[in-house]
Length: 362
Image (cartoon, rainbow, N blue to C red; front, side, top):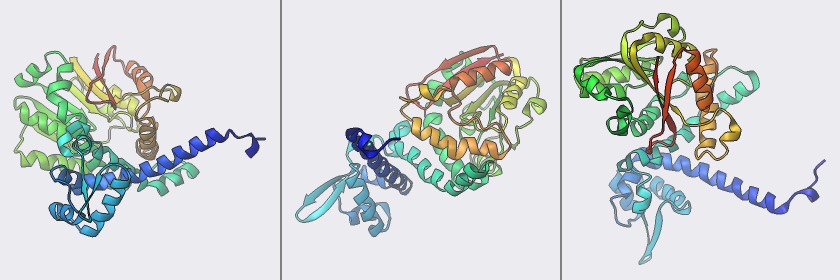
């Protein structure tokens, strides 16, 4: 039995320091989410060193809250403090703005910081699942589709034409000429709506389980007067049986397969819906199926947490397989083979350290 006298004091002290860093990091993530959502980072990126009142006025926010938020940002090393003539001023260095503002595009970590508060909001529900099994349904995640749409906007929309579509040879030309496209698990439909606007000769369909997400996708299509896109609320649990056979030239899923109730049946349905010469593009998490291979993963703790608090549990809530976010390349390739696909090529894109891109054919 281990006693305090047997503990490596240096190791214990180092681990204690790591835990303190964890607490500070978690707190800063919540505050960074507020900085992103309130527009404070965007505002500060265009200001010279300014007082809390000037920053609050520029952002149209309450000074007292901005002042306390600045305290967290300053002690966390995110903003810099300047003492000028007895007045405290704050600035956001350009190097930090490059990782925290909407102008940063795909590099904006402020978007990802929103997941911390979102996951924390269902902690009680997930604790109940630890004790009693089951899962937490989509309906308990009040901002999930909003945050996912913003996340997708960074990893997908920002590089859709420059990096993602070119993964499939001659796809852009085919879209210009006119083909049938399906996005499975389309969420709020931002990628599909953008494609529909860009390629008016092609026809686009989006399926998602969430009525809220589909309503938002339809509203965007109406706002842009896009007549070549159709969105449908659809439970894909039996997609292998009711998928429209051989209807689509190009099918996409963007971080959608691993949290399906029955991803095996969804993949078989995608193959059924694909034309014989069609292509399926699957974006999903870049990781191994084995935890021991993920110990150096730069986002490992975050992705396993998101899996526990969302992706795995929403699948289990539907009586599903509960694959989880970190199902990994090995499991993905195994399930694609079991679904009947024979040609799978995996690509990595420099702008997206979170995902792999699978180009798949029958």
